[in-house]
Image 1 (cartoon, rainbow, N blue to C red):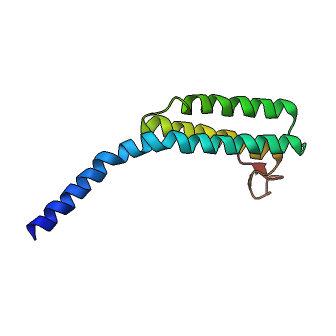
Image 2: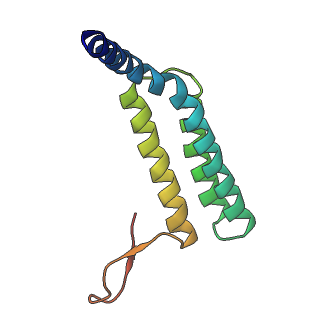
Length: 116
């Protein structure tokens, strides 16, 4: 029974030690793929004329800055999550610009408003 407890403790300790590094090493690659997906969405929206050239350029520049930071490689978990938040802001702005963002408000004050 004691060996089983020691094994469980060893596995648990290994997971605790490895978890922060897993995010640091795998995170940038996954983040870059997400950024490229948003970039493709921006290009698709511009091609469909649902956003202006100026809006597309602004969104592409914001996404490119995030990609540049993510491409540097390993980063602390806090920085990774901050980049994800900033990418979500770009994605939400794309949705608002294209009119596909979800609306908030019940219309009682004269209308619904884009969330973002």
